[in-house]
Image (cartoon, rainbow, N blue to C red; front, side, top):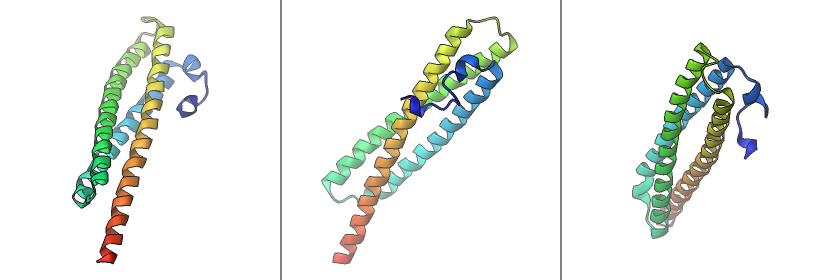
Length: 148
């Protein structure tokens, strides 16, 4: 799990100042915005090629992938909301660093990063699954076109 972490070194969150954590969190936000666009594109691929599905297995695979994409999109949106709140909190810490518990905040920051790492792992698998099914369907179309 730690191999998916984004931070530069293991103790970065504990040593970084608030501004550095703010920049890191902004990167997370940007990444999640990209993932949402990519998930939209993956859904478009499924919608576009769903008509070509001839076999029940293809249709079942696509339905499963669509379910996974919806869950992944919901997870991404949920993380995006958490990051927005986190950025507001960080902004308040930058304005008044002694107002809140630094250790508790840093622990939440680490947990948020771990959640993002889990999301990225799930996203990559979903993306790969969509491409593999699409490739199989398109290759099957080519093959069936040659056999006619």
